Image (cartoon, one colour):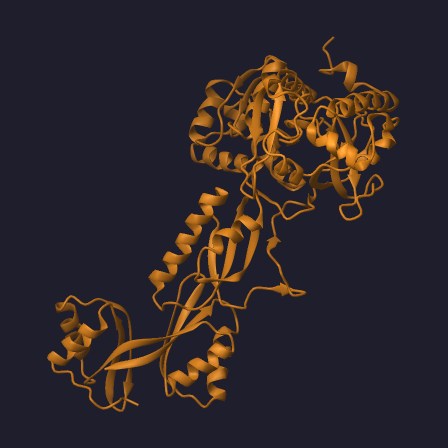
Length: 137
Length: 436
């Protein structure tokens, strides 16, 4: 399945992250999963939340650099080896993953990732039996 | 007895004698300038003639000459002699518009070499010294300027040119180099390579004199260089508009640079009002050439800020002593001997649609090295892929290097995060240990 993710440019200086979190909290937006990675000078804060479009508008209005990005997600059983199997299917199909993070949601594992060929990734996963018809949240 | 001055007839003049000579030469220069279409028109517009210059104070009747005038008259419009009498041309890079062109006759080159020779003699160099010139050659006047000057003094002169430190060190050792000219930041680099090669300058070389200049440096930086090598380092001032290096140089007292007043009239003016400031107060250096044939310049605004320290000196020379340059009255940056205007950086940044209009140039000294960081605001986050963001910073860095010949560190920052003062963007923050 495809999810909308906020990718937020975060400078490496004090108070930047808290500004973003405050803005979201004031709008009553719930963060479901997030991941932050950094280079020497800046980081990108990636967020899955309850209302990504609304969150994007609020943050942009506050002058924050961000992009609404489509990412691929797949739910897996919370059992050892399941992530390896799902990623293995992608790998076998020659699909590369740019970044990935994971979280638990209602007793199941969720892998969120950005593939170099997103449509093909969804196809490959469906063929491999990963069918996520209902929206996650 | 050994000669103390290279040009005793000029170096030992009293103040009154200097001023009498200056007036005579000023009159000659102004008369000669009437051969220049530019100055002829300037004088007509100002309603003054050659006969109006009767005293040194009358100099103030003459309008200033600026770098813009040189650009506007590019390439030969200021010359006071026909081109066939010129034998050399030096030019600035012209990165901010038309380049500036400086022409020399054979006599100009000889007088230029004489100033450099006078300086080097002043700090104790003699014909038995070996002079290595580790300065860029070509259009940069530090190369040929020191070459001809050192040769005129009679030294064995090695045109080593800039860079390739292991080769520089080999020359220093093999040729018995006793004196070397370089930009100060390069000497720090040279010492690092010497350390790596296990070369001790005190034990393994005959170095005893450095001529340093072409980039701002602090007293502290000079002392550190002297201690690192066990070599006396003398500050040199030059600018291509006047000829190049040679215009001013420290004597052994190391207490200010003697500007040669038989060659130049020195004025220090308030850069806003253009009125003269009293001795001791910082203002903009304005120079009038007194001996140039091809391209005399009257009241040239150098944009360098300095002050008069004194007009006498224990060394016996009564040529004015000026403090090391304190900065610029325009926004030019001098980094590692390279002149850079923020507008050059701006021009490059604006070629990248991914970045916003604001930017900040920060100059720092890290591990004895001067560095530049350019922070640019991201217009919008066009990707969430680090690789692409890093490619952007690399492309900006490459484009900047092609423009300013140095590779600054390029840092992406969030939009709106750079400082703005009074609605006007702050472009340059200089944190170097330079102007202390």
